[in-house]
Length: 369
Image 1 (cartoon, rainbow, N blue to C red):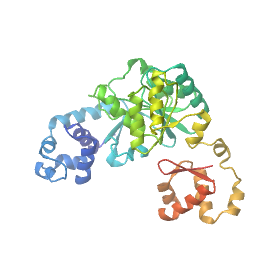
Image 2: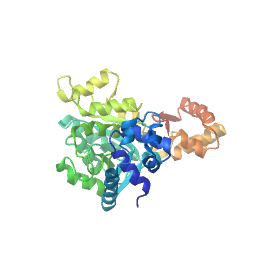
Image 3: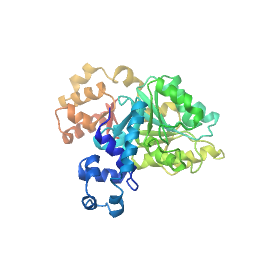
Image 4: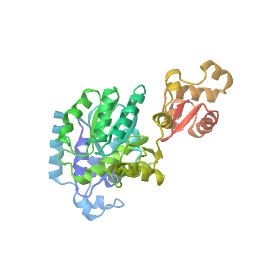
């Protein structure tokens, strides 16, 4: 089930001072995690940015023994190990400079669906709860999956309402798969898996839900999606960090405004005032801003295909039809499947957008209107 590269990747990542950035630097220089592990100390020190202290910690038999046990644990518990340097991460997460070198997955992260991250306070109010319920009720006919953190409050409500509306949902954990925190959401996590969702974590089975892990976890929640919705949060709440990560990845952020006297609306209001998030006015407007269109979803376009074929030049017609057939397609996908180079496709995309026939989304994705 697992290869030598999985083994050496876990051992290397567990080495002190080998974070995700240094891991990537080493693997790029050597070619693989196994080759890094087998390099001499002298050879390691020749890699730019790798000093004596880091080099001395690579090759420790204790970490290799741990990695062997970790592979047994993952195989026993049906856990998939995704390696970034083998291009196995979900594509939006892989775009993030600080994406995890290793991502453990239990269940099914369906990459044909469009992820939407929704986060908020543990102290969810009736206002926030109603908003989540109304939003997911409105989104149930779209091909999406929700991403949150399985915490008490807003996160649990997102997962719960997703399940009720038959929307696949993904929980990102702040610890390894040897435990489940908070324990009260264990049954919820099992229902997520039973309904074709997934649990994800960058942490191995020796890592507990330490406080600092939750902020680290939040960057994955932000990185998995083109957009993050913040429901309710106080000043400096964990959801603010998720929004900050999303901003740094150039992703869309939307926040639910509230009364200035409500403690758990103050963080959202601040994000909006600082232009770090767009204000949510109605569920309908949010869905439109997220790039969804009821007409496009049901008919494929505002215009009959035959009419488009008669009026558009060949390049425009081919690209428009491809985007209609594959909503949220990327520029890279178009380049691979349309017989045109990227620099020739971009002007056509701009023309179609000016004609009001497509909409460009974050992450260089496109949707027919």
